[in-house]
Image 1 (spheres, rainbow, N blue to C red):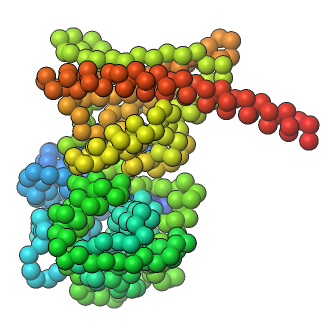
Image 2: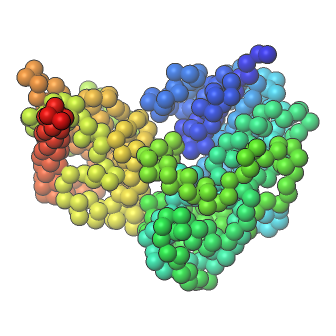
Image 3: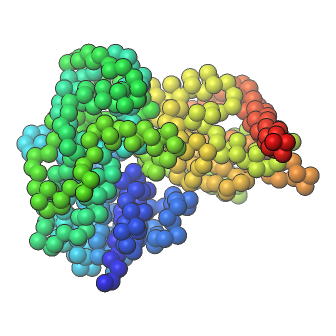
Length: 502
């Protein structure tokens, strides 16, 4: 039997990043279409797939990506984007539909969202439904799976439930906490996506998917509380809390930025349950059954405790955040640029210094004036930014494209160099570079470089206004990183001596 060839769009996203390795395990040959190949630089399955750079808005790139493909997975959506995202989504869907038809693909698999059969939909839900219709009309057999709240470690919906419940002993919530939700475990979403590739050509339709329970959103929050070892929360419904105000509230009390909170909350204005259960006769449930909600929560919490966040909402692109890489130094000519350079010698070997650098952010913090960092993060939240509480997926390891609080990993040379690109709202573009160099005598040298490209007069005034604070924060940061590396080395030496004596 010939090996089936799958093309995955959205491979850098939460669902796509989990689907690719499971397709490989299922025996597929996998090609991924991504805008930037560097985002997959450090994923464990990179060497096992064919990576094609391109944008869904580029019809020729999409057509080339579809050559010699059997099954196409359409996992791209515009959650978190502003502006005319709807037109872009429809253009991308039309390009995929045409390319799939031209290259005679055997199937398209699309993951959309559950939505009411009647009534007005939010822009995001409407756009996802329209994308499904375009693919279903492509002339290529298509299944549009429609899921509601997906529960898994690192999913946006799960993280919103988790942080709302963790932070608030008494929750003031909109009236939609009484709406009905049919959550589904991310494991079961993977099961349906892979099984959909085997459907006969006669299946060309939408199929609702969901877990075994229908719950109120308030019940989901308290189900999480029980699994997390907390008391159930009292919930005070406020009918005046509009979707816009609710998104502001979620933005402030959780790490979820407003751009992502808005489409989630918009989808919760209606009951989010399966309208039909035809999936059971077309794709039978997993042999072990669909995971109940609290079991899915328990598994997600266990993955988080073990630091095994396979993919996470944290690494989703933030609409409006800078995405251009740092230009090379010669290109700075003619541009105003501000640089804050700090260098320190370190008595530890380079591996200890690098371990501290790669572990920066998240629970480890930024090694200098945590109150100042927290205040800056709160200010960023107030204007709709990502803030400082986005954290990081893995407490020890980083890879290109990952989020670290309000930064994004733009480049990493493991063991030596880390460049972070700022995604907080500032009047300009900012980067932070951290370097660990080995010295001939077995010690190391630390270099820390903050780079700022101001935008207009406001950007220049902004830099001047924070210079006094930077002098304290960045000096303290350099000193503490070096001290932490030296302490780490000392502890390793003591542990080695104790092990030798025992």
